[in-house]
Length: 295
Image 1 (cartoon, rainbow, N blue to C red):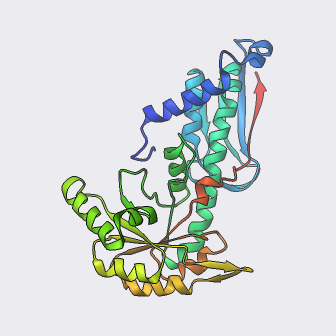
Image 2 (cartoon, helix red, strand yellow; image 1 turned 45 degrees about the vertical axis):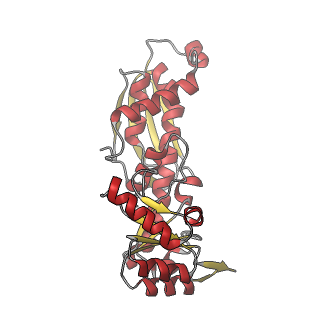
Image 3 (cartoon, rainbow, N blue to C red; image 1 turned 90 degrees about the vertical axis):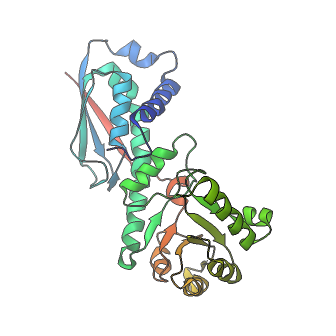
């Protein structure tokens, strides 16, 4: 099932562009070596353990290339798989199957890598009830698929773009003249134009945290770079002080130095959520393969 921010039309458009980019005027190798009426069956397997994602996207890639191809999955999107496990099969004309192979696997591997990394962070934060959020640090043109993969891995989508949340960053604060004026301006704009949107503001010092919390206009405080790591030691004292200053008056989100290794210590501070750009901007693809058999 697609998330609410992704339509079938948009998914098809993404896959059409991916196929067009790869095929150009024609898949010359396949056209030269494979008869147009040659049937085939292919098996997609996981070559390492992880969380598989992008099955619906891959099925769309095969359908865009040749509607005669039939895709059958043995697992659902967001399922944990083991190395060697058979994920699904594709049956139909060999030409279309071979032409769609790389775009389909590229998306599956990227989305599965994101889902796997997210799942690991979610597991690390689970004992403390802390949410794992994504960011806008996504591949251009693939944001909705990247964020879909985060959701399939058990994470929570942050804002999709610049339009669905007020997020006042350091440069906005500087341009507005400070934390309080920036919050006032956002509150005024929200009342006039976007009453349903939440306001989040980035804070970098305990003084900014105190000002923002006491001012009262923010729904979320982004506690940025308040965790340091030195020789493997995670220092969360500043973040812990910031959470105490907020004292439940609004939600809190920690960012900066959020890795799988640091998640438990950060989550233990009582912060409501952790955001990690690495989930989508530093993707390690999950190794998947497609092997074809004729007949």
